[in-house]
Image 1 (cartoon, rainbow, N blue to C red):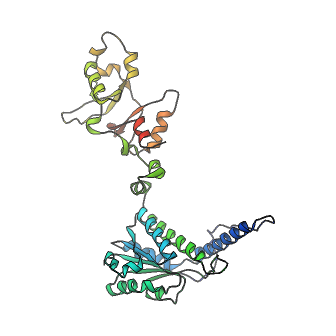
Image 2 (image 1 turned 90 degrees about the horizontal axis):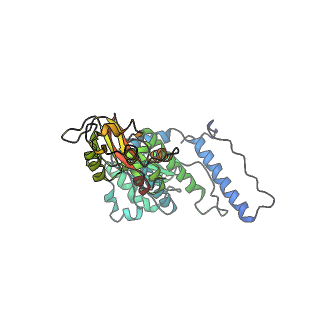
Image 3 (image 1 turned 30 degrees about the horizontal axis):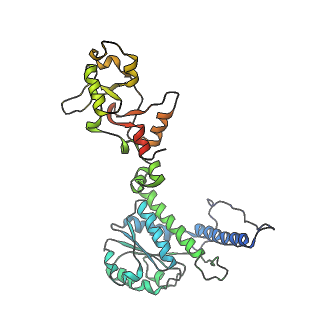
Length: 347
């Protein structure tokens, strides 16, 4: 990293938080800790330089896994960095340095890269792992506060943290140092994400569970397709259309321009719903062709649409829609019912 302490023009100007006269001792302590860590992060941002670019280049060139390692608090930070990288498109794992000395070195392949964290740069538990990378030519990127430490000296690229004091009043508990390591790990992960063009769609693949996964679900993830689609042609008598409608169980049937022997549909022309049946109720209903009964140009959605947006379309307006055909290039490729979206946890 560059030793320049010039503030980046992109860095936000944040006013210093002055303790209020009526602050409790706990609040004064909290403000002091956060101020110290924020100041250190500002310095880190302003001193990033070519070494960061070199580390990203090495990480992008890695054809195997990024193996993150660290001891104690650095190890806890390392686990988080590995998890963040793995969830944003970088194949990553965490290996405990002490376990590495007892067989887990076998988890590190010749195509891998090791990202090692040590504030002091002289953590003894890292020595076997560092020696292993040097012996087999495995790239080593170090994050440390000591440019003269063993880790920085052995690394292919050393990301040296700027001088900082720990926020702990004793100057002993890892506080500011772990915050800097965590933030630098996030910076690496995001730089890799952007360099790879990692998209929200890619993100959803790695985050299928929880609220985030539900928010990123697409219509194509929850739709019915293939044989499940209720489809007939415009010439089909309503007697047969009603059978298809009942057999598929969605309360409607799609009307297409053509339907070949393999079941491949032509363009979607319209739909027949329960409401259409009520509006056209007459003695000759079952004898009429489905094209006479259908509602033309129904509302449809593409498979790429967010499922939450499709649910909004269903709920919009005075008349709620309970189901939608999914159309691509004019042809029906799927079908979604409101219950499918609710079961998937979309809201």
